Amino acid sequence: MCSLGLKSDFYQRVYQVVEQIPPGRICSYGAIARYLGSGRSARLVGTALRQSADLLGIPAHRVVNRAGRLTGQHMFGPGVMQALLESEGLPVVNDQVVAAEKYFWDPREHLPPPKI
DNA sequence: GGCCTGACCATAT
DNA sequence: CATATGGCCAGGC
Image (tube, rainbow, N blue to C red; front, side, top):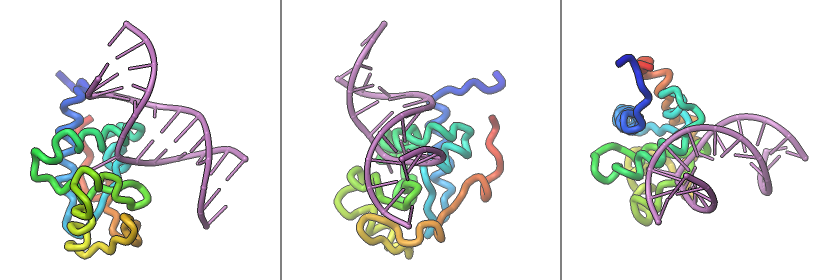
């Protein structure tokens, strides 16, 4: 089969991308979705992580929203996500990464194009 | 089988 | 420049 967009496959791809995020860097759901070719399914990226973020050892704490806000903080626990980011050198204030744009890591510019 | 919600993003006011 | 609203796609009940 050439390429049938199996949703389960989409989830696995999300995990693969998040796993490739270097320490001290952050990525946004939209960037990942866009990298996978589903730029309008940014919400699915978050949903995918929520389903297996705890099962896998993927650095899901490095995935924040476009504004650098720790939207998935509730899933990790109170202050856990922030502590992890600060531990990697990322300044977090008010559940929000300061100068997130500076630490932003775009998979579309650092990772090879995925097979569509 | 249909309706609502959701770790979002882009645009308009 | 900041805030408010709509749109998109899929999963869960």
